[in-house]
Image 1 (tube, rainbow, N blue to C red):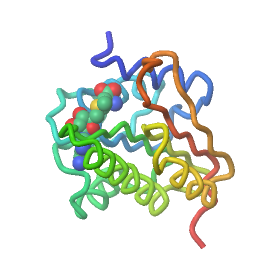
Image 2: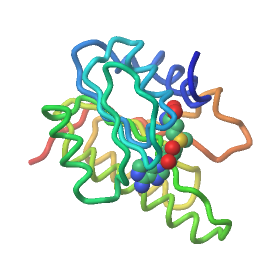
Image 3: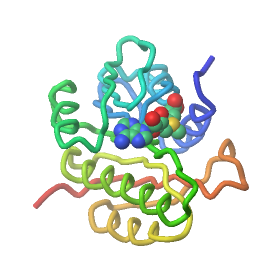
Image 4: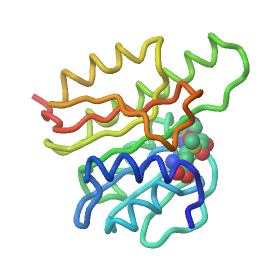
Length: 179
Ligand code: SAM
């Protein structure tokens, strides 16, 4: 079985996208408790590196570290562990909410933007990025930014994501590369 409900969301997304397959390099941001890594490994991905603030029980052959992704040393470390540029960057990162609406929104958007910047700076040309986001607010700005860098950008809401939650997934494919 899967360690998280989130695993069913990635399953649904990838059943439509077919991005996870043997031979590719994958990074999983906000990996705990490990559901997305499990789905990736099950689909034949062997070169996958994940990170979370929380510890994750091993999922062979994935490598998962316990670290804050906003630490500027984290991204370069993940790439070294992976041994090269990723084909796919996954981010299901979500900060703990503090209950203050404006603060929570800023923290969520900050984390999404850090994920986007990372994907744009490390992906292989042709690569893909999937990230949890939230409807409204600045998400349309993030989508506009992604459209500069990817040939296709979609906003997908898997059935496994509760209809009453504003959670949505941004799916960007066909990374255009860095000039
Ligand atoms: N995709 C995961 C799965 O299938 O098991 C579920 C991820 S959960 C919805 C979000 C995760 O993001 C939490 O485990 C949280 O600790 C992590 N997270 C939040 N901020 C983070 C940060 N700055 N660095 C690393 N992980 C972070």
